[in-house]
Image 1 (cartoon, helix red, strand yellow):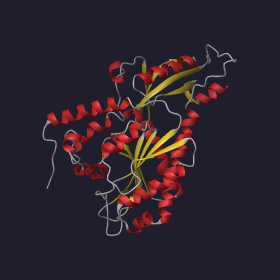
Image 2 (cartoon, one colour):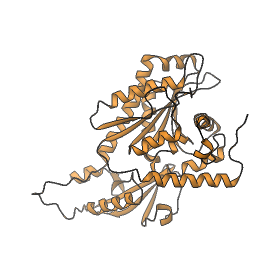
Image 3 (tube, rainbow, N blue to C red):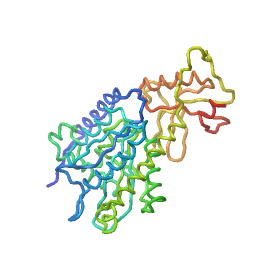
Image 4 (cartoon, rainbow, N blue to C red):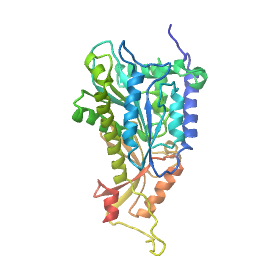
Length: 367
């Protein structure tokens, strides 16, 4: 029986309106924090087994890997781990996003297993985006279909149909702000699967996963491999395979975190007896606030950037970076960053340029 929830333009518009409201409500949960918070999401669970064969269940393998990743992360005193589930229970997609948003998380990492009617194999990591091909849509459709098991899903998801490619388009709009960071983490994960574990690298991809849309921070969905492949299924279900996958994911998260630690400058107030320099101006250096990275080329109009003016756009590869402000005064740059965050660009950060080349902000300050 085919289920179709979107029958008209009106329902599609209603769904997009719902996305906008959800996003701006979620923004209010983002505040300053001391620890680096990672939400680990084991896909499926309870009445939802996910993909399964006569031997393996996706929900069990995903949970085992997530618990191993969490155990390793918890050994770091500056990292806090939050789980969407730690047992074989059903958690709906909206609740998973709510857990991440209310935790004020820095990262959302969802772990899954893949399946196919062939002996396909290999690992791939997704960020939220439009489907680049039919296969990406099929993967997203399978993961999104869990909403049909939820109570009152028609009302909860405002007419979203997991079987409709058109319904997915609106999902990508609000996560554009975090695309750059999500792609960075996804690349680290795939690099570890490829170089450290020698797994087939199916690449970093974009697709319309509802669980990624529901979060307001950099987010990825990992398809660790195909349980329908006889060798890969056995590997993922083994104690050794799960541990190796967990180590690869853990190392990627820590590499991502370390990159942020090096490239994000935190304003530190010195002891009171020591006067603070009123103006820290660096000749030949330009500070800007990166507020977004997007595959879309947007007009540099205030209405596209929540009212912010003086926006610059720079194309790097297939993506566009958007910067707010430009100054050689570091203290002024911090004020600009504060303004950007107040407008809702919570993941904005400072970047520095010297002779039109991007340089490390921390190196500039140290010099």
